[in-house]
Image 1: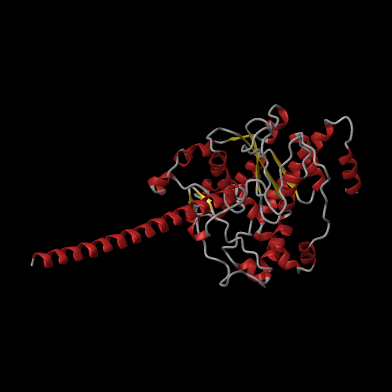
Image 2 (image 1 turned 45 degrees about the horizontal axis):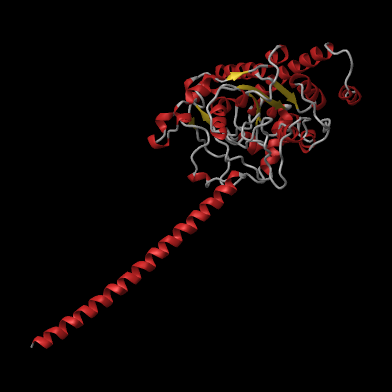
Length: 406
């Protein structure tokens, strides 16, 4: 009996030992598997971090936190960084106007000065933006790697501080074709984020204007070919406003001019005035706050004109060489090559074929831009003539200008 009991116990112990040994082997496999996953994950994260350091990695649009900072109370507490929590400072950025710049506030690329390019659609801003990063004669020019749209425009002797805030340097950090309202409230926080430090800077806003009819028709033709700019946000007062689309499909390909003009939500109408005005003066995009449309238009136009004067520089698409000359004399920076004046374009051909009544309708739809452009045209020539009168000798670019303007 005792022998049988002993045999049973030995058998039980052997089975238990085998089970424990098998369990330990399985546990070891699981631990090794989890450890392998961790190592692979770490390698992937390190690799992606290296790639994203030199590229514009981002999540899909619908999963992305807006680049333009929301107000602190609109963000979850765990997402409020010191930079965003102190967003009120961006409402009081130091703007250097043209008048200050030519008097005693010269642009200091070594210090805390930043050029901010406000890029309005279809004004030749893409060409001008490339001039800024590739055509300036600087001791330390922007670094433009091959097969990459953006360049690194660092201050001399730094590897992170930016002197240029534009599409081709920092990218669309404040949103696609951000306007005056968005940029003035976003640029300082954005640069703090890029450079990893909070500090006050001096901002030199610049832009390019274009004849309103030509700009409008150029945008129409661009949209007709499939462009939408639907990723462009409409930021004001710390929030993004959404509007109905003018088209039902993915884009507005093949749209006719009548349909393009008839959409009340078409932001092509008076685009230059809207993008240069301080929209907070008219309660942002809330049109019901000012019941009289003419009063709203008056405020927007006055604000756009005032902000154009506040800017350190603006050029005109139709005055390439004069615009280049003013920039060079204002910022004391020379371009390596002269700007090219294009005398014929798709928009000019389209305008030449427009009936008089449709041309008049385009002008009426852009009546604010028409007045703004006339104001800008006169202001640019005043600045040009004043700078010319201060010269003792004509530069080479001026000889070329005189030859082309006859």
